[in-house]
Length: 264
Ligand code: NAP
Ligand code: GCO
Image (cartoon, rainbow, N blue to C red; front, side, top):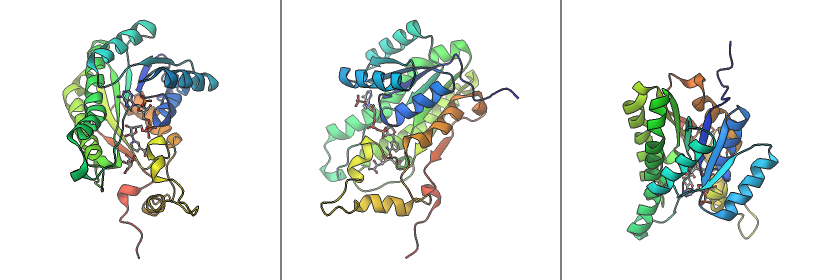
C-alpha cells in the first residue's frame, strides 16, 4: 500500500505558525513532506520562528500578514504561490482569546476576537479556495476548540467565534466538497501553550492554579495536552488518508467531551 500520509510536494500554509500549536502542526506537515509557509504579525516573531524552524531542519517560508486584513492575505497567498506554488493545505490556526465576564466585555473586544478567530479563517479560506478548485483538490483544517461545543465563564466571544468556525467548516465542506476540497476541524482540548499559560500559573504559595487542577480532573487522560498531540491528527486531515472525511471536527482532547467529570 502506498503511504497515504505522504505530503511530498504539497504546499501548506499554517496561519499563526510562528509558535505554539501552529508551529507543531507545521513541523508535522514538513516531516510528512510538505513545503511550509506560515504568517505572523511582527518582524521579531518572524525572525525567532525562522530560527526555530531552521533548528528543526525545516525550510519554512515566513511572511508578515494579519489574517483579518483581506488585502494582506491576498498578497500573502500571491507571494506563496510565487515562492512555493499554490496552497494545497490551509491550516487556519491563528487565534486569540480574551477572558472577560460577558457583561464587562466591550463590543470592540468581542468584535476583535470574532474578527481574528472567525472572520480570519473565512478570509484565508476564501483566498485559497479558487486555486484549490482549479487544481482539483484541497485540504482546509480549521483549529476549533472545546468552546466549539461547550461554554464557560468569561469566554463568550471566543466560544461564539469557535462555534461559528465549526459551522464555517461544515459550510465549506457543503459548498466545495464537490470540487474535491475537504474542510475539517481539529478541536484541541486544553493544550499547554502561551494562550493557556495564565490558567496554569503557580499560586503565590507554590501550589497549582485551581483551573489547572480543574482541567486535569476533567480530562480522562489526566493531563494537559501538548502541541505535539495535534501532529498526527493534522497530518491525517492534510493527507489523502482523509479524502472521504469532510465537515468533521476531530476533537483531540484526552477525552474531555466524553466525560461527565469525577464523581464526588
Ligand atoms: P498562541 O500560542 O497564542 O498562538 C497564537 C498564534 O496566532 C500566534 O502565532 C499569533 O501570532 C497568531 N495570531 C494571532 N492573531 C493573529 C492575526 N490577526 N494574524 C495572524 N496571526 C495571528 O495560541 P495556541 O495555543 O498555539 O493556539 C493556536 C490556535 O489553537 C488558536 O486558534 C487557539 O484558539 C486554538 N486553540 C488553542 C487551545 C489551547 O489550549 N492552547 C485549545 C483549543 C484551540 P502573533 O505573534 O502575531 O500574535
Ligand atoms: C479557556 C481556554 C480554552 C482553550 C481551548 C479549549 O480559557 O477556556 O483558553 O478556550 O484555549 O480553546 O479547547
